[in-house]
Length: 187
Figure 1: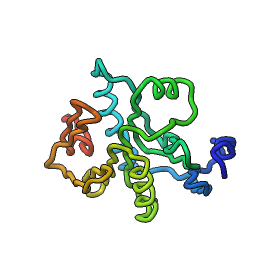
Figure 2: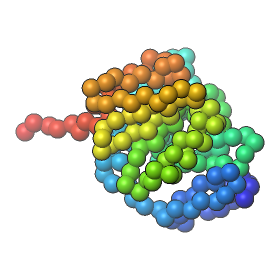
Figure 3: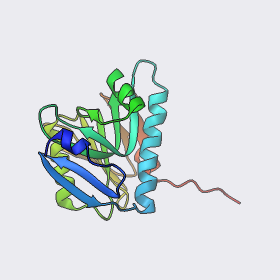
């Protein structure tokens, strides 16, 4: 299937779709459990807060299975849980809709019960092939973030660590525990 044929498919028919190397993948539209939804929201919140405080960085933070055409020369469109796209083109895409073209500066996949090891690994390999500078695999159950970069070994961070977005996300730093912390109000 071509990207044009893929993009012509309906978006709101209850089916989640990705195009991997020209092969249409369809998944039943599932709701995510509360832990997944909360964690994805936390990641997006902290990245958005960082982005809003940047004077010299232009881009957008997106979440909710944002459509991304990873390669300019391959028939591959994936949905990303949370992503940071930099530059004026990313802002224009965010405003007008459509698919983001090219890899994000950061792709974040938040693991959920419906994710299989094989699907997560395949997507990770696609991000790496596209030279996505940073990929975070966030595990809400283990409360870890594993950072993958092209041509480098993965590094795992847990609740006791601080996570940096350097060099692509200059100045972004967060305690990993913050991504999983629910605020409780004392009565």
